[in-house]
Image 1 (cartoon, rainbow, N blue to C red):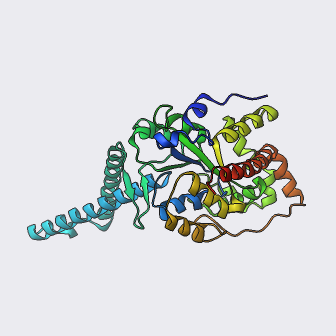
Image 2: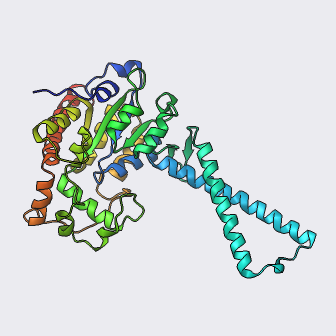
Length: 358
């Protein structure tokens, strides 16, 4: 039985084997970021080696930091001018007690933060490209949260044409709100990893990643076995995301069939265990005809480690142990989807050879 895809996935994402549109229009690559599957490396690779303008969460963060720095410098200049005025006019700062001075300083700082937030809200009503100190370029948005995607959609993100590539874990929401079926379609691509390995890696990462919005203090005192047996352990995140059922029970046969159909029709598949070949396929498929960029990517991002900013070492889990079995049972549909992605990987490789892409 074949299941029909949700309208906005069907209409706003181009089928991966449709090359006719590329002659007339340029569809936007949209990377489905499955956490701890090499996505952070891919994002950094396109920003540094290919110098593409990305839309992820980085642009909003960089924009905020730059605005706060600019405001702090302005405040410093204003404060310096005020101090000089007081000295010239003979005002005596010793007339206030130390505690009064501290309270006054705190109030002034809160005013600075309030002004900073107001300035940020006003300035972020306009989409623009921001440049990090190291030269990476991003649109000043966050398309990794539902709130961020909704805000950006109101600013006509699709028609702006600012982003060369989109990175988001929220594929369905992004396809619906950041793309359109007329002139601004997307081409989905993703890197897949063994679900158990991915979840183990995610656990050890989240134990330390206090900066992440998903950080939970409970992780720091847990063992991987504690995590596997707890409600915090992921359960079929990939399938749930694709079929839009993040909570509650899944309809196994139907939901896995829909998830498989989405990646069968829409996704150019990459594998973390085949990152060298994955980089080459993405490079060829999207027409990034820049040999220097490809060389940079292969040298720095193909092997485990390299410049991967989000990689970290952690203990290995015994595939024959009970903890592995528990995680495996909780993610049986994701494992099924991963195995299907491997099948597609081989099929797409043959197709690309037939199309002289490899």
